[in-house]
Image: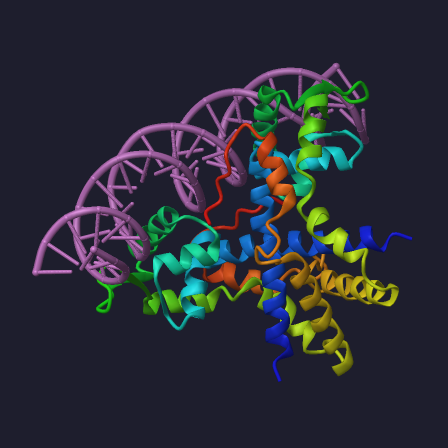
Length: 165
Length: 165
DNA sequence: GGGAAATACTTCAACTGACTAAGCATCTCC
DNA sequence: GGAGATGCTTAGTCAGTTGAAGTATTTCCC
C-alpha cells in the first residue's frame, strides 16, 4: 500500500504543472514570471504595495524587488509613489497598462483550477477544500518547528544559509 | 461562501511553502536547487538519465541541462558516460559523492509531508490522496486541451512563446 | 548503399533573477 | 537631540535560462 508515495506524486504533479503553466502565461503576456508575480501581488493588495511587503510575500530580498520594480517601471507597467505617512516607504502602484497586462495573463491557478472546481458537486468541493487546507497546514508549518532537517543539513554544509528571513 | 477562493489560497500556500523549503534544503546541502533537482531525477530513474530526459522532465531546454551537468561534473557529483546503444546519447550518472549529497538533502516534499501523512488515520489518508489526485488531474491537463488562454494571450503578446515543447 | 532529414548534445552570447554588502534617508524612542 | 532601527537603493557578482548555430550520429527511404 503506497498512499504516501502516490500522494507525493500527485503533489509533485500539482507543483510542476503550476510552474510550467505560470511560465507560459507570463510569456504569453510578454512579461517574465517574476515581474508578473510582482504585479499580481500588487493587484491582490488593492493596486499598491511596498517593496518590503513584496519581498516578504515572495520570499526574496528587497534588493531583488528593487530590480524587478525598476524593470516594471521602465516597461510602464507600474510606477513608484512616495508614501506620505512614512517617507522612507515607497508604494508600487499598478499603471493602467499594468492592469491590462494582468488582465491578459490571469493567474495560473485561477485559470486552470477555478473553472473545474466550480463544476463539482457541493460535497466534493467541501472535501477538496478540507484536504487542501490540511496539506497546506502540513507543509506550511510557519516556522513553528524550526525545521530539524535544515539544522542538521546546515551543520554538514560547507556554505551558510542564504534565504532571507 | 468562497470555497473556491479558500482552495486557491490553500494551494498557493502549498506552492509557496514547498518552493521556499526547497531552497533551504538545497542550500543546506551545499548545492543549488536546480542542481539538486537534476540529481534527484537521476536518482529517481535508477542512477542514470539522459540530458534529453532531464530537460523534458524539468521543463527546460537541453542547453540548460548541459550547463547544469557541467557544473555537477566539476563538483564531482555526477559524471557523463556515453551510451553504447546510441552514441549520440549521454548518460548522466550519479557519483558516490553525489549519492551522499542527495542523502543529506532529502526531497523537500518527503521531508515535510511524509512524517505527518503517516500519522493520519486510514480514512484520512485515503481522502487526502483522492483529493490530491483530483486536483493534480485538474491542473495537469497534459495538453489535452490546448490551453485557450495561452493562445489568446499569444495573439496579443509582442513576444513569441518561449517554453520548450 | 547512400544521401537527406531527424535527433542528441554542446557551445556561445545574452538576459533575468537572486544575493550580499554598503550606503542614504527617515523614523522611533529614550 | 542623538543612537539605533527601518525602508529602500546601488553596485558587484553569480546561477539559471534561452535561442541560434554547430557537430556527431542515427534513421529513413529510394
